[in-house]
Length: 205
Image 1 (cartoon, rainbow, N blue to C red):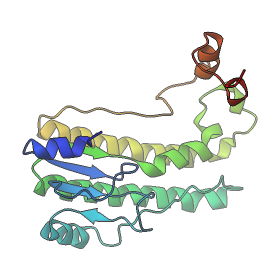
Image 2 (spheres, rainbow, N blue to C red):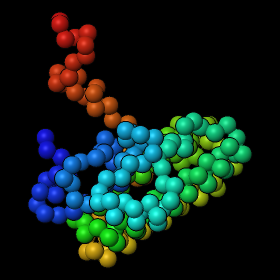
Image 3 (tube, rainbow, N blue to C red):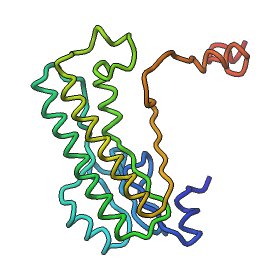
């Protein structure tokens, strides 16, 4: 299917797309695309007018896409520098967003917090999302974890500020949810019970 960004561009409007998965260069697209960690190179590639990209790189020098949360830290001395890197990455991302939204006449501004996913996976026990993680959690890590989350809150607040300035709607989406987990739903199991889904071993029976 035709990409949504191309449809928007074809209607005469511009977009800003930052670190969205599987979204790289797009010929003829009006606005700015910044690829994420799954881009063709290890660094964030920017696609847009040469003048726009030059201005952004000058305003946000050294902006790159790299994975910070590769594994769960073993001790607090390992966690502290990771949190600082995480906060710095959001500082850079905020600078990029502010620079781009001031010079692109955008209709859609989409930002993926790609480092947040790794943080949630590695620091799941300290987020106190359900009772199953109580035995794994390190209580003396809570302060640093909350510092990281506080920077995420500030970043979302910045997006809310921008959306208000442009009278734009704001939509937040998270594959990890936004509150405490009260139960798990096995969608695949439900589909199999009703005969809608079959496993490979069942395909030829």
